[in-house]
Length: 298
Image (cartoon, rainbow, N blue to C red; front, side):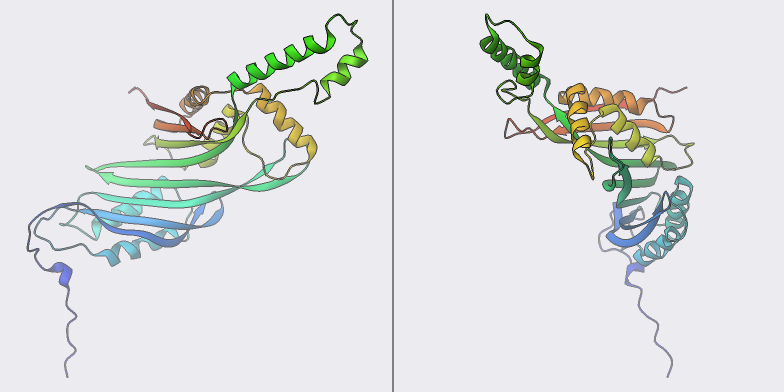
């Protein structure tokens, strides 16, 4: 008996002739190599369906092309090769291709003062696309930090000043008395409010960038903010963190401006859109600021 030919339904003509912007798969599990780390990731892979008569694409070909990501370190060049294979395997059907990779980068972070260290999680997404014969790579990075309200800090200082006047009015000042007062809850009657905050960075890379500058951008953002959340700490680290917050008072507008200036300094960045969210401890709503920038043409 002759073997039956397996039907290829996707190769049939569509009953409704209409091109589609994107067709593919979302949430594909795969390992990726980033900066020497093998990470669990999820991928969204797809192409445009420009042949309006074709019923569908060949999704298994996209899936098999992702095997290229398993052994090599993730770079713009590797992403470009994968997208080119997407298109080569859909010649005549597709002109554009897209790949998004979502994962969590783990970085070992040292404490501010003590020798302790711990792992910190950074959600990242990498998107590569061929669109109108142009290749682009975008990075999305979430950075968590602490923000202390400048207005709240000023109001707290005023209350402390008033308490000082009340406690020492018409009293000869002695160094020991003032020192004890400053270290007591009676003296420091108010503290400013602070909150865990997040910076959401969306960065388009320059076309000549050879690597994915994830760690570089994370380090630049945390340095600009000055109050990145910590991992393992001792009391000395907690005190140093309180000092860092006191020296880096910021509204969401301040944080957005600091990040704007930091990202502009990277030669790898062509354009960016950043969003900072301060999850208010005073209010039941968030304070948010956004900023965009595109490098001027040479």
